[in-house]
Amino acid sequence: MPVCSQSDEDSSSGSSNDSSGSEKIAEPVKTAAVISVSFAGIVGILLGFDIGIVAGILLPITKYFHLNHYQTGLFVGIFSTVALPGSVLAGPLANSIGRRWTLVGAGLFFMFGNALLACAWSFEILLMGRIVAGFAMGATLTVAPLYIAEISPARLRGTLTQRRFPTMWA
Image (cartoon, rainbow, N blue to C red; front, side):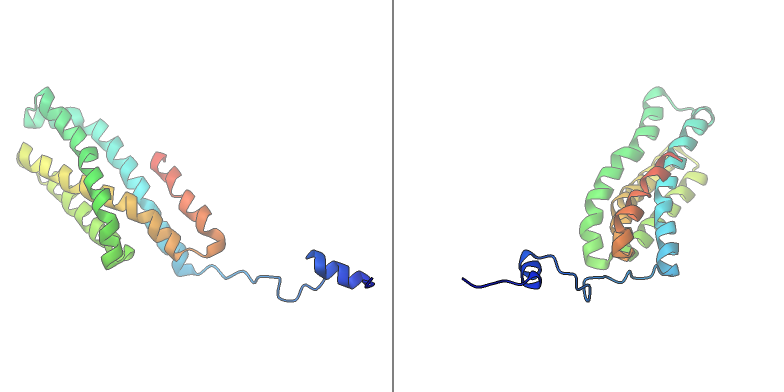
């Protein structure tokens, strides 16, 4: 019968006192990543702001454009309705042109939609602004967490992605 020494038993059971190579060096958090995550996290704030502002502006818009109940409901609901196709189409678009450029494009669409809302001279233009902004919001809500996870250091990836969601209720 072979005789085992204490060091042989330790190495065979998987517990080794040798710590060389077992320690991982944490990668540094880059300033550019923090800034990018902060801007990508603004998406939730934009959604919350849009929902809140519509609740406050609904009565003046209804009076100014002489909207009936159907048009008022359409004005409010179309934003969320077109966010669904925006979020569905954003995934393949992000895979083809990249997450950053998808977010940039969606941000430009969101600004264009809000410019239409600000300059609307008819209910149709008002509705078109809500459609464009809602589509862009759906795209950003899908792509922003992907982009944050992609640029975040591995040790902070889950934390930074998760911290974007409380901004929706800020």
